[in-house]
Image (tube, rainbow, N blue to C red; front, side, top):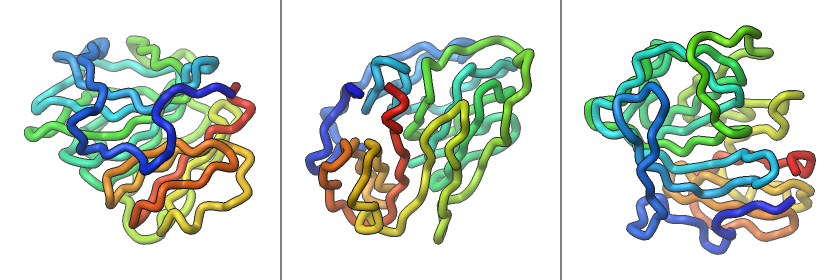
Length: 210
């Protein structure tokens, strides 16, 4: 599996001034958002990015993505389908989940967003319903595994109290979001993880993805 993006090292400072920001139009949105790509699988086009929604950004229509999305809010808040995700919130939406009335808070929203494939927006509800339920949870205490692997969405997510709890003998790559330190890293199988402090949200990239 060949993945593009920053190597582990000390990880990426999500507050850093040298992030590769670009303006990206979102279909149906009231304006562009700012996006810094952190990692991508060129075969499946799965990706993870830091996304900044400007204050007052909206997407009032109804639609869906054909792939799954999961995100963690670092700052501000965003509302999707009536569910408000504030700073410290993890959310997961399966493929074909219907979305309505998206809106960023008055101070905008900064989030790390993962997509399981190319994020192709389709207007209106999907003709086939999602195969499993969404997840919306505050990242407090022991969240455990908010998302288990699914046939449509391989790999899972887990919140660990420390990167020291990450299994040493891994056969999968993982990306790590240090939710307290605001750092991110991709770690290939067998490579050491950066020693950033605090809780870490782990998402696996199975070898079957490539």
